[in-house]
Image 1: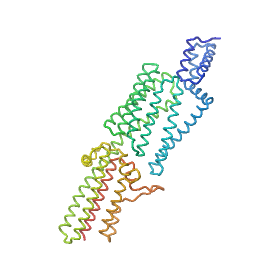
Image 2: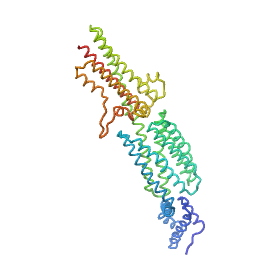
Image 3: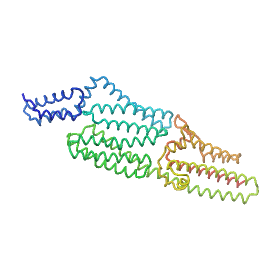
Image 4: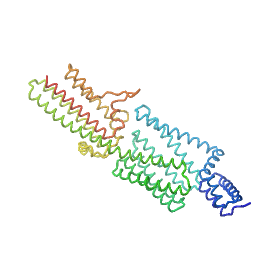
Length: 481
């Protein structure tokens, strides 16, 4: 009976090591098993190369890794418990994050608790177990820094996302630390590890291209998150490098080495493509289409407000010049002053919003408001939430609603017998809460919750239009008395 020589056994041993088989004496048992299968085929008349090729197709790297996984699961009680906990925590965190997102979109109560619990399970249970299991399965325990950087970067980044969603202080610092850990610690370390394990120079170059592309694309997300200039350019460059160069080259290289593309690999590529395309389209289309629409709307409303202001000034002058009754002139003055104060208050809110979002002084913010296209962070919503909604719902939107209600009441008191005027005001400046299914959504939340700065500016300018139109109707009614 034929026996393999030392060189042939070394070839088989190297392939088993390449599969990452590390558990106890399992690598030796697998080498013995494969050697026996190859020797049987050689005794049937095949040479070593063809015999080993047949066995490799039957017992590939995926099969060897599955054998190790099943062996650990059956023998090691702690490993079995960890794998079970990892699966449960992964499903729970995914479900909580999904439900929390739906609750936020629908403005249902409890979204903060659900999201916080989901992130807590994800960061403190699922992620550490995944990284530990991956590190424990490695043949050589030399990549500890890779897993530590992934753990620290992942936790700080996900915590930053949670803090930003919940509007807690410190979100910017956590996101910055998370981004820098992943970009400049984890990804370079991953590249170093991949270069060490690469079998060919071509594969090394592909790894370099992939990691550099990922760094560029991730930087674009960081720039977009912090509203730094150049985010769109970086996103396009990173997406093109990943989609047009790295993924096709990497796919072809894997196919040449394995002679097949596994379902697992197809799944990874599909998800990667989806994330890249979704992120790119979301960032680019929202900036150019939706945000641009709000900019145009805000500009048009500004023109309307300027026209109404001139018209009301003319109506006021007519009352001042043509009416002999001091009482009518006094009422007209009160209406004009209250309308000016209301519009000035709304202007101050816009100034505070722009100054906070773009981190500029109020004098500069006043100039920016006249041309909303000059707002840098047009899609920023967290600062709007903090200022307008507030942590306990006591933001500026609540006071704005109270002032608008008082303004309408003061106008209506001038024409108590005119019910049509009162109905007109209610339709013109509608600050009532809305029914959303079984839940009542406040006027403040429906107009300013999760609202971008440019949309908030447009809404506030429309409120100014309502005030000016109400002033105009009141002055016309006075003029007709």
